[in-house]
Image (cartoon, rainbow, N blue to C red; front, side, top):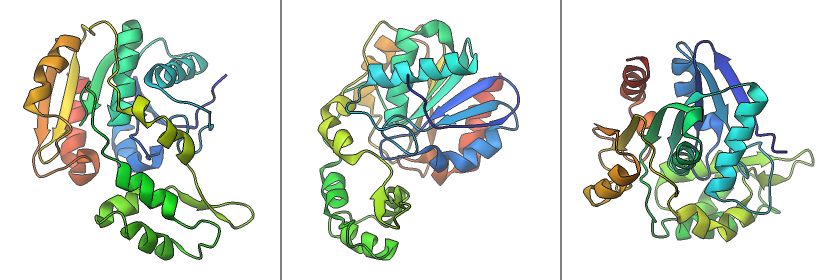
Length: 254
């Protein structure tokens, strides 16, 4: 039995939010607060992330199954589903396998395609951090900076760093399994087409959704709509938070 870490807030129709690779539900704090004024928001840590259980493997069918299990535990026959990046692929897999459990679907800056390995430097940097001798987050950032130039990416990754009860630094995510299963994480979700409405939200400056992926998106999601948030990259929900919230509300409440 999988017992995902879960934060529930608000009132109204259920909305499940899923983060991306190396993320946690805490990355969505601002959106959770805004959306919980209109919905009962169920923000989750996916397996091997945040405070959810570590397992010896991961895949989109497994992660989608975890969300169905969570819905059953919470007594939810169906819900709106919102997923970003890896969480967006989980959301797509869930919709294709269990369309009757999904009301409206929102996919943030990801497509149902196979991606090249975007994360070699990230894994190299995370593995290079000397957790045993680490004295501070600043020291961890200096070690990461040898592999990852972008400060915002390092800051995002360092949200995973915490101190154990023994005051030892450790990663919240299950780094060895995520690295071992990266080929699975790179894969597209697969299954029959999802015939219900779905909104794809793209960051203007991100290359995770491109015109080349249009045919594959429409093959699996023939009712897809698109919105682009200008001046944003792969994290439009954080970079232009109020615009993102308005897009989500306009879509879910219409």
